[in-house]
Length: 103
Image (tube, rainbow, N blue to C red; front, side, top):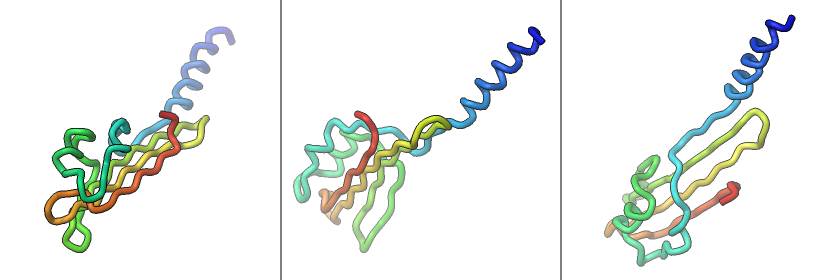
């Protein structure tokens, strides 16, 4: 039975690690408070946050989404999302940020 203890330990570690994961691409939140509708440019957003996780179009305007989610078998899931809508001049038209992460 003593020889089985390391095997059971390895199996327990594997089960715990298998219940963890992430999706999206992590992004810094330092500059979120600096985003201004009608002022901040797409170039500034790229400098601050790098490339978005997804890009799309809405009524002729560009929509960028920065998204990061993480979860584990022993903790509640955490997520943060920044959605930015640019006008046709590549200036922020509107944005939304939501997070339940400790940052």
